[in-house]
Image (cartoon, rainbow, N blue to C red; front, side, top):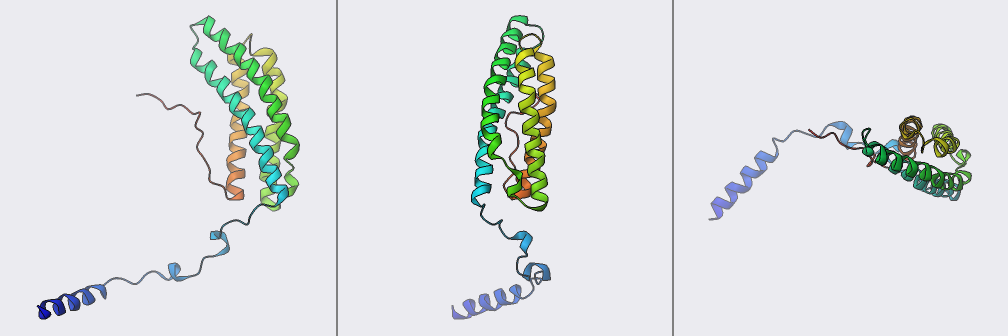
Length: 182
C-alpha cells in the first residue's frame, strides 16, 4: 500500500513539473491602468447625482418614444394617443433634465474625463432644448418628433457610454432597445 502511495506521489510530481511556466507578463505587478479608479470627490458625487436625476428624464423620453413606435402606423387612434403621451412625457422629462443639469459641472474632472463630461453635458443641454419642440409637435406629428428625439438620444447614449468608460464605471447596454424577432 505504501508503495502505491509513493508511486502516485512521484507520478504527480513528475507530471506537475511538465507544466509550462507562466508568461513573464503575468508575474509583473499590476500597473496603474489596472488599478481601480480613485474614489470620487464630493464635487464628482454631486455631478453623478445630477446625472442620475437627468437620467430619470431620459427614461421618460425613451418610454414615450417606444410607445410611439409600438403604436404602429396604421392605427391612427393609438398613434394619436401615443403622440399626446410623448408630448406630456417631453414636458415632464424637461423638469428632471433641468433639475439635474445645474449639478453637472464638467470642471470637477480633469484631462480627458473632463472632455467626456463636457460632451455629456452638451448632449443633455441639447435634449433640454428639444423637449419644448417635442412637447409642442408630438401630439400633431408623433413620428417626426420621435425621429428628432431619437437623433439626440443616440448622441446622448454615446456620450454617456464614453463618460462611464472614462470614469471607470461599468457600461450597461441600453435596456430599452428591442430585439428583432425571428
